[in-house]
Image (tube, rainbow, N blue to C red; front, side, top):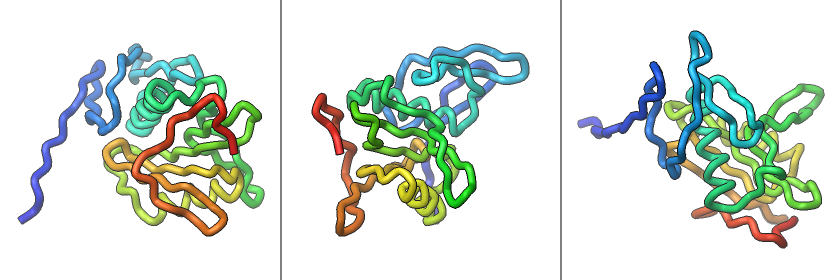
Length: 166
């Protein structure tokens, strides 16, 4: 018999979005004509409230408010160049010297955290060499730390401290 799951939902304007397994936060949003927009904590502007953006904004809040990664050192849709192809990492947190510390790849809630999603962030890792990577669809999360011997699974992400660096 299939496993029954109950998904809680949040209504924002005319949009129904899933309640995620990340800490809730007060949402600043507006109706932008035919779409809703959410105020990005990092970019300080309104952006389209798409399901992936819903996950990304929850992660920005969690990283900033709960794990103390400074917003001023956090890049959203961080540009990358992979073998001549332009890509963008969802969230990259840097240390006070500008070195990437942590990268999070966000997917919409109904996208499984598959090998393809992990492969995507691993390709981005080749360019940025972040010591910590995470993938999330807002419901499920996977995090890894990188050391000379390879990747190790993390149970949770580390707090950022004033002396956090690579």
